[in-house]
Image (cartoon, rainbow, N blue to C red; front, side, top):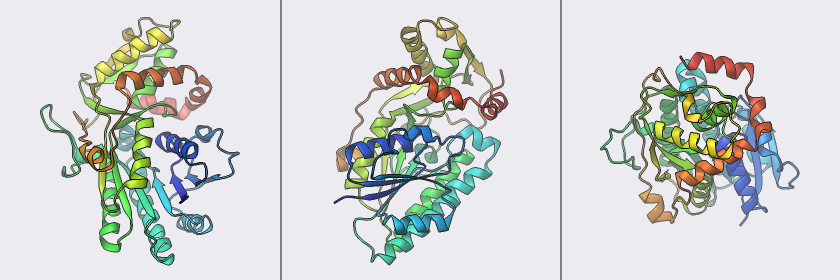
Length: 354
């Protein structure tokens, strides 16, 4: 049975990778992308899809209830894949209001519209509302703590993670109260093609190419579990097709790495793949800067549930994924250079204290 998907935030990093994955694997499904094209949304991320008969792009805000209602009805949407979010911790510290508006109010708007659409169509069993969230809602781990599981209590520590936790609770409540067929996924740190330059891995790649400092917070020993975005998309595919409404699935890459080690790996790859760098070896550019406020020390995901219940496991190691990612940024200068706007430069200078 074909699906009619509404993908919110589908011009962003993870959303656009998901759209490419879905259009390639399910060409007979209808895919409608709704994206506000804020600083992190980029229509160029969807290049090549605009001519496909079953693809449509709509610029708009998920808080616009009349627009969401119209799309659900006219496109006969049966599946929402909800990626749209303000997602950068540093920006949430500088301006938390936008995170509450998009992540909490926007998710509520989608839920309420989808609930009425689902009820108006006699509550079909195949409808799905996939809410894509983050492991940051669980807080921070000590070095010897077990990884986050689906039963780990929420303890968000930044305005970003708090807003995502609030949206998670709304999604869960709509299933419990109304029976709405929602599913929540909480993923670890994603990386790969189309990631906005402010995030750690593309920031390091681009700064290395420009001969600029590689800013590393604090002592560089914060630990993250790195998930290649292609693996994340394959997991979401499985969740949509086989996941159980009302359930939460943690999606991790089984790749815990200290930030300093990750950046050193990137530097080695840049030295190998881009031999004419302005500064060589690239590791000479590593610069420790003042730590982020409330910086969580460690994230790690226990992905046992999605493995045992749905049969999904990640296939890309961090070494393989970083090589693919560095190669992509090296060959897509025409994609990332236009993103280094005056606004981006102003944010960069405000955020990193050298």
